[in-house]
Length: 296
Length: 221
Image (cartoon, rainbow over all chains, first blue to last red; front, side, top):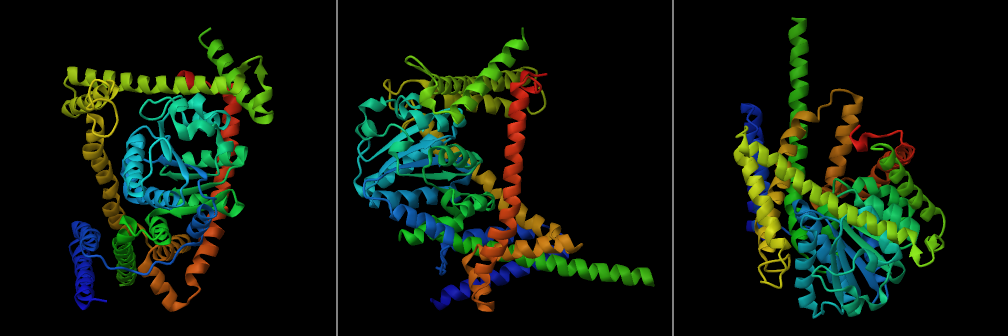
């Protein structure tokens, strides 16, 4: 590893410790904000490549997609708002790399009105160009429809009833890929990327009632909730937060923004842990002093 | 009449969905009329109207505030301008110009990619600063429960980052695996399962209350 890079990171860590000390001494939390800003910005500019251990639930999702036959039909959802793009978009990109590489037929949709259709359009078209895939033959964007419970349930009977047209208004009957995709029964796998509670409905309505395998990519704050589905075998793998996205990028051999973000996330987590430990040391010392003061 | 009709509609809508779940959807047909897909189309259409209702409501509330020059009326004016700036170019058919509609290169797409998405991401990114500041003040070893929470939080935070994994493995090779097994797939999963089952039972009870007309808050009562 480059010696200058190591030196730069040692200096960065030292600066964080100094700012933490200043924050405790002055009681001004802006020193903490400054340290966090350093730890987020610096690794984006100068990346330190760290070895990433793949989580079992990420490997499970990767294997499930890998085991699909070539030209399998996969429904990929973009159920997230722009606020969580840093965590969720690398998941969608990783999924698309994997699916396009396997020549899967991809149907994209969203249950999120704000941004969902635009994100799906931008991310999918960019990667489709890279793999030489054609809209309408290799992939299609169904866009957004209101009332997600009805949408999820209705697509089990007829996709065309819920989505008479694609995102740009072309009737589904005029889109070649949709000729033999009529409902969930014509799909091999559902890949849900989400930042909200819709995942519960994908499990309870689509997986439970239509018996189709569902794998998910969710934000880090949501991930703990879904271990119950994973353990029960209802969920076929999960990408949890930026770490899950980075794991998947490693597996599909396409390191991207999530892998790059791992250094920043590592430094910020370590800084928070250090702050918590320092805060507790001060807390215990103060408590002891108070007790001694009371005795005197 | 104002109460009875919505209760009958709520009961019938709920009953159709329960019926469709317990019997095969194909069997709930009357000639060419398939009940379940038909009801679901209606629900989607009604869902579209609720979005419209939301827009009407936000315009009315903010317009009145601007008209009366209430506190913060400038922000409300900005909300109104934003609503129309996003909505009007989006609803005009893109056949007239590629600037209209919601496709790539449209005004809507530009506003979304270069204004909306960065602003929402910025708001969410602020969390990192607040969490960092709050963590060292909130996580205190006040009692046994708080100490347990602190230790668990520190372990999970280390487990979720590559640097932390290296550190944990340097103590013992099996620690990351143990955190996955006992914290995430053990204590966490058991609690989450309880919450999921509890929420599902609550949702079933609430649905029954709505269908039977006991719960009427959705009618504004």
